[in-house]
Image (cartoon, rainbow, N blue to C red; front, side, top):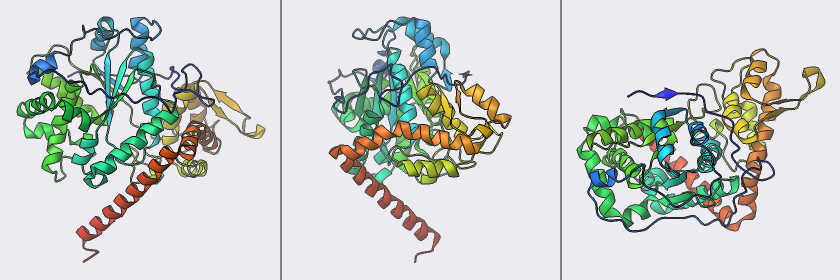
Length: 431
């Protein structure tokens, strides 16, 4: 299957309030989180999947009129990869308000990629007329043994994550839905489970095991039966949610491709379009992605200002080297999309203050040594702290949010201790 890659666009304003661009109104803590629990007719798996037609007409959207080409440009800028661009253009030509699906396991504290990058991407999609369904995969977290498989804890973590998106500026005014997988599946079980069974029936076990990356697992790991079921369910989610576009990270690509292959099996013409966003690396050298189990590898959404400063100060940032430089990745994928510029404050003898208007200009200076890490890092810390301050304020001033964060930190600490003990027992350190 062919695919086309391009760099992520940097031209859309993502968010709001005093530290953010002003083109989109700030989201309110009082926004209603919409959950669609309407009953569905009983249909066999292939019929349910076939019903996802690009010709179905949603209610009129209040989005300002954009041309199809403008909408395509905005939506395409979200993805590092798009499968396929011609299908996306065709979808936008025929469907004014396509459905985008994103999902996450409530598995612990939220790092900045999940918090800020998702907000940037969701706000781009809604600005281009999309309806975004965010799948709170609580049952999936339980299958993957997150929070020790305790569903009550997982749900609390999910509520905490929603509070962060509300605080950071995700546009929740009408076109974003948070759907809890346990509630939705239970309410429409007769539609969901036949889809899961059909996906499982049509695929061999090795093909399903190749999707284990979506759970943060490898094919070599000893997997539980529940973890084998997981990819079949995630593939079925796409059709269950009637998604036109799968907007997930590059690490979820394999299961999204599985969904397109399933369309071939059932002779469905309109396949879900895969829009895979970039994965931010960890802050230390050689870390391909951020890890919640390694606090030094990422910035968390409610980190204090001093914590952010220390983490960025210790981050890998070799002079004149762009490739594999996590600080530059943060600037490219977070700071420029958020502020449309990057401000560096420095002494006159070091070149004086400078505001970069695009990433290419910054890279040029950095590669020539005209911008040093000692000046870049403090500027990056200041920009990140401006983005995160509304989140800190929310978790300090809102009683519900404050309690959720306290409980999540306890859960995470307990899980970390349990992991250490299990590791010690398996290695024979504790007998």
